[in-house]
Image (tube, rainbow, N blue to C red; front, side, top):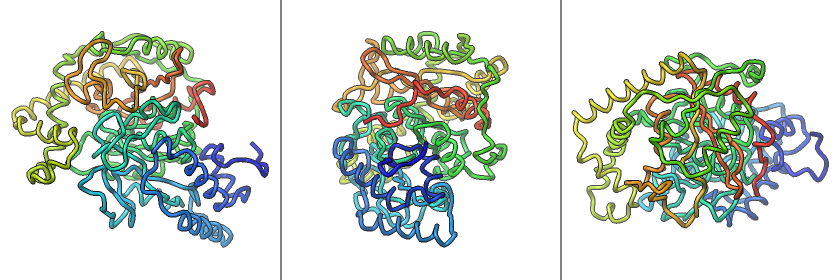
Length: 465
């Protein structure tokens, strides 16, 4: 794509934008001004970016990036590009509120490791992306900033907890964005906004708290190329037990290979799924790959109970904050609920949950003996109203917690598997559908190379708004 004087930088992929800056087709100031103008016009409706820095400061950093480039100091592929960080991660000197009324004025003292890597690649931090309090829930809203709305249709939720990141990328407010994922927090908003999200193998990206062995950090983008480039920036070179990753240009589409995909659907009718969602997913897969139905031989009710126990262990560490009555009154309902679950979980239950997790990992490993990748719908529902906190029933089956409608996401998390969320088309009402594709642990490269070959223009919407 050749650039003209009226080319909008926000219309370019992050990869193309990077090349345009490096080769002098666009200045960093031009790029920054275009993005800030778009944010000014669209963010009031989406509420995707919060804690936005002053325009003057952002443009001054862009001018400095232009001067650095003129002096031969090229920092990396994100040189001079605007970036907003999920409001659970730390950017030195910027607010990290965690979407909580308890931390409205908290200023980070240092970058998190993955943020330091993004900074080193040349990014200019312009603000934060909205998240539910402590990332709890598949709907991005909190008492500090309100709800983030979907870039495809602002009447819908953007999903969560990386909803601000997803809406900002889908709406062209950012070239790419970081997110995090415990219970689908990258996968759900990617599916709801029609973009790509990647949950790496556990341990691949540094920065998650040591006592949280469920969450990972990962990228969101409008194309797989962009997804790969941000993932490689965030990933550690020395991730324990995982093979080193190549450079971005070494990733090649695996179009010549026809991997066998195991279609897990609704896990043998265990999961309630909104009518029509599986049909769209399956048709997209049939158009793209060789698929076969499969389902692990496993007690999935037992898996859910293990999930509740292990998740409770992560959040029970917040009980010291909860113990103060004035804090408890200002906490959101989901955060209080999560902490309270921990009071009924003992060591015996945790040991049983760990045993269940190991058995689940073995069950999926046996499926990988037959299939290259395993596929599920990314969500159990289509995007719903941004005014609804969460679905209390799916396909007529009641859900017994604020997050039970996200059960489809726990399989990849408990197994620690790399999982990519891919846009899979729209239903007749124009609502987006996503699929999540899981690969064997450590096979991040193979999965992303398959996604490169799978990616089809009909599934991409460069800008949603």
